[in-house]
Image (cartoon, rainbow over all chains, first blue to last red; front, side):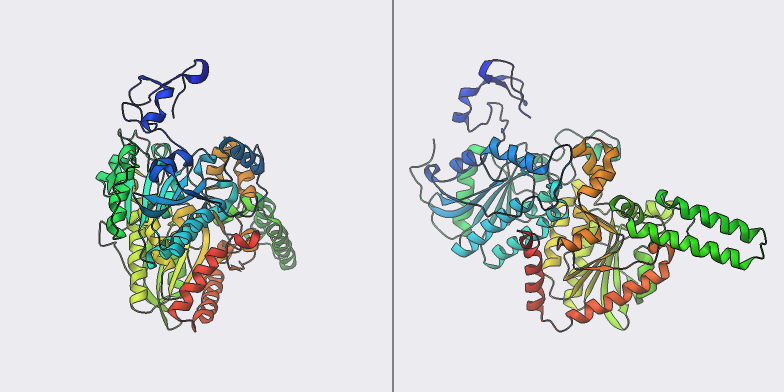
Length: 277
Length: 314
């Protein structure tokens, strides 16, 4: 997605939106959004840091799941792919859970990391979602889920498919507890993830330019044998089609979430000095 | 006798051809014909006892395998088909209606693939669009409102990957259908009759009892799709079929489904009427097993069942 220029240490990277060269060291100060507005994919640590007051939160360990129940192997063993993803990301699987305050409103935040095997929804990610929802229900807190996935974890077969109903049950538990469930659709959110918990939020926000779909553009082009229009299945397009409430830039996300949560949780948001300028 | 034989049935096809030739030639040796028939049947049995995931994929997709319309005409009386999602249109890939199974009023929904070129086009090869899933939700609402059990027949390669389907919210429509099925206050039974293809299948398969026909398949992605992504070679579909554990037998063992319905020798397409009757009997047994449960019990048991999938493997 983001092409790195062939220079030592990747000092400069090329913005896919404008083509301009951006100085890498500037990106953290820009929340990894290029001056032209391209929202780069980010992992859970940055995401949690941008979301919670002062970037402070408690990390919740995710539960263990059965390991490679199908003994799956393509040209590589699934267990080897998992190992590689774990050493690359430092995470056990795609989901990270944090609990903390957003403008003083206690919330559970779930981040799905695309860098971990494409964020794919397998047993661990499904269990992570359920764990986050049940934690929110147990503590009487809202759940904010940042989604990103290429789809299902094929190496887990139908056990991966079963995460669609399983996560949906967790959404129902939040609903019955009268707690807000806010989805923030990040690039890309596709396949079985979109067709379950990502489209069942009370409120759907999306990051600008995020690809959000069930079937990906290449699959559709192969099916209908025509080129799709510019912007097809992007966040702005979904907002136009009525599937997303609001497309929100990363630098405004914290404030937008706080506004929504303060209304739905009937709490005052503190105007906190902690706003990262 | 089915006119199309699958690749792995070649030896049976040859025997059957011999029998036909003998019969057509006016052969009077009845014993000889009977002997050949017996041999053919034995051969078929040997083959079907050993078929793997890829062969089952072919059986599950067999063009004359009984489809939704055969199950409806064979099992449901006083049937009234219902159409439309009341929002945009009607989707013939996912059908539904009201009727009775042995005097018990029910709501039925299911994918229809069609059986010849015209009907396949009409039913979009059983690949539903958002209107299909929204119609399913509408019929689930109706089942609940009138206290009628819901029976779903799953047979789809997957939800349709088209431009219009995406524009009208395919993902949202599937998600809502999963959501509604899981919260139903009435008994819900699913029979996977052929292909259970991914999200398009699970959308109407969140049942109290999920049953699969002996040679049907249920998978997160088609073997061809999996092969082209993970092996980067679509021709490795046989390997992908095996690796993904898509057969009824594997899925029963993994705890993904509840029950397997036996098929007639050589697959459902060799004796469609027998197959329909066997499915009818299994539906009645399943309905009976759920009849004493309250709405609360049904929902709790259904949720616990799905939440436990996978956890038992730890």
